[in-house]
Image 1: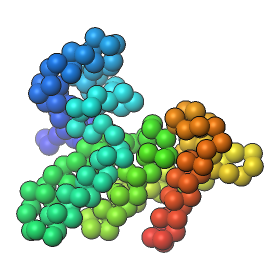
Image 2 (image 1 turned 90 degrees about the vertical axis):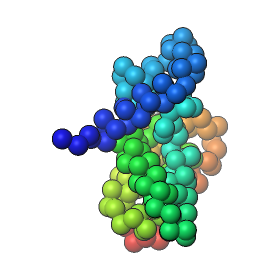
Image 3 (image 1 turned 90 degrees about the horizontal axis):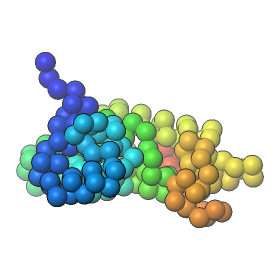
Length: 181
């Protein structure tokens, strides 16, 4: 039976720990969740820097970059890496935790990746995020100054009243509209 995305992500995390024992020991000593025992899900809000998919805003552009390099050079290893990273992130980023000003970059680049890859999963992530933002991210004045889950700016490391969240939400809505979704 083939491994599921969750099993692949957990295996990749165990391999990352094995390649970085000093960093894994620091994480464990600091009281972090580690990756081995609880797997990627246990560490989803506190990824160490050596984990295969620690930050959405880094991985989205990396996936897209690998795919573009593959398409431009014909080197299939770049497509394979893009597909592997994309499969891992599909499982890991079922729910975003960093804040729209960061998470938007993953969603935006995965929408562009979807146009090359034709996988409906990426549109689904964007649609769910946009729907959640539309219903939960606005404040009492109608500005989208909350996270996609309705939390205040501080929960997303944004200053109170900052337009970071509003801009990220507006950009998400614009990309969805541009793609006719």
